[in-house]
Amino acid sequence: MVLVSAVRDYVNRMLQDISGMKVLILDSQTVSIVSVVYSQSELLQKEVFLVELIDSISKSEESMSHLKAVYFLRPTSENIQYMRRQLSNPRFGEYHLFFSNMLKDTQIHLLADSDEQEIVQQVQEFYADFIAVDPYHFTLNMPSNHYYILPAVLDPSNLQNFCDRAVDGIGAVFLALKRRPIIRYSRTSDIAKRVAHEAAKLMYQQESGLFDFRRMDISPLLLIVDRRDDPVTPLLNQWTYQAMVYELIGIQDNKVDLRSTGKLPKDQQEVVLSSEQDAFFKANMYENFGDIGMNIKRMVDDFQQVAKSNQNIQTIEDMAKFVDNYPEYRKMHGNVSKHVTLVTEMSKIVEERKLMLVSETEQELACNGGQVAAFEAVTNLLNNENISDIDRLRLVMLYALRYEKESPVQLMQLFNKLQSRSAKYKPGLVQFLLKQAGVDKRTGDLYGNRDFLNIARNMARGLKGVENVYTQHQPLLVQTMESIIKGRLKDVDYPYVGNHYQQGRTQEVIIFIVGGTTYEELRSIAQLNASNSGIRFILGGTAVLNTKRFLKDLEEAQVIARTNANVV
Image 1 (tube, rainbow, N blue to C red):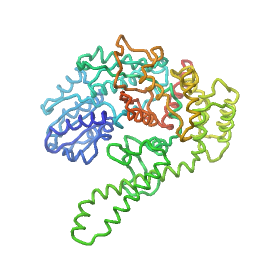
Image 2 (cartoon, rainbow, N blue to C red):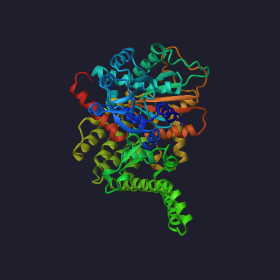
Image 3 (cartoon, one colour):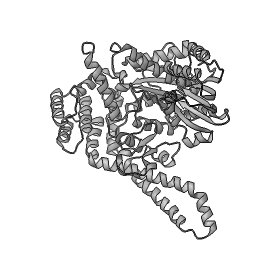
Image 4 (cartoon, helix red, strand yellow):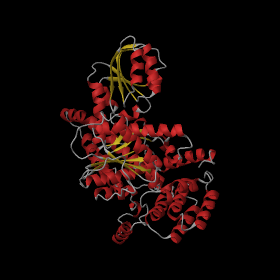
């Protein structure tokens, strides 16, 4: 609940003390921040009759002096310029300005100078500068997420913007939680080190007063890691509900766009998938695909029982009862058809792309040894006409990450075959992945074959047998969290920033992945939080990844690296 509640609380405080009809004005990022925690009907209850984007409202001249304007914006120089123009020619009766992070003194002066008619009632900082997609999961939805892959010398100003946004988001999370953390980072990552040091500078030097919450309990841990330590997780096909919907159809700000799936009623072309608003989804978001089918069948049966009792209307009392229950009935109907549509669509994709066949080999590549068998399996799938381009590419990438040192000759054969079979394949992309996230670049024991304890653990898992061949993979994050719980996270791999060390066992850990999180990692976090280990984990990152998004970032970074070939 923690992150969603914090952002909801900020939105409540913005809206509830301003009486009368309101217009809520957002920017392209705060619209996501608000929409994942607050529904349109809830906004209406707070007398918000219009929601507008700041750039589109700038184009209109129409006076609306009967409305009070509530602005919720990121404190960017662009937004301050928009505000100055709008204050110099005001259209609304009152202006209430809320910013999602710290304002600079110069920005406050600029706003004050522009408010010549003194219509600004208040200016406040509400630290909701992150998108709380799930109770223990936040993202920054950074469009230029690919900068984490590039060396700093290639594009220093864009990389600085990237780091600034990451630090702003991390700072806001801790201000919302009213905590100041001890900070550690992944040793082999320059970008993780940079974000960690800049976050420490913000919290312990520049704004130390703001982050001084005078709490005597043990500080939380902020661990900043790099996506490149585990490039395997975002490359795998997924078989649990939430992760699978994102991988096969797509999720943006907890909404699923189904317009491309065929003829659907208008109210089902975009559906909301939120554990806060949908009890069935909350109960099933981490369940396996096979179990989801059974659970949906149960939900359909329950609904048919309700529908049958509604058909049996014989008296005025029955009719009154039906009308009273109709909103609930309609909601139940919408929910049933939403989940049936999603699962039907995903079943179709699984069959068309032969994903069970592909995924079995992927899981073998991610979890088990056996280079000869792996080479044969990948070659067979590359030759299979039914396998899609993206699945061919991910198989070769997974093979390359696993066997980059062991079988260079076979690797070249796979590169050549991939190029001949996939027309869209961009040459050199797999090699670029190895250069950026190969074995020499990674912190941690990704395949469990460097460390004796990990080798033993993998053998034990193999002996026990795996209940589901499609979900046997565990993200590297699981090892990291287990090490934190046991107090065994090595200082040499994850150094501390400054002279702030952990005193005693922490009860709260925020893991921030520069480069983006995955829903498979969120599932691991949720399972650990449910296991009562005594530590609450929160996951955050610069974006939420599926394979498509991970590959897009890789391709964009490769283009920049190619144009600066002499530097990389």
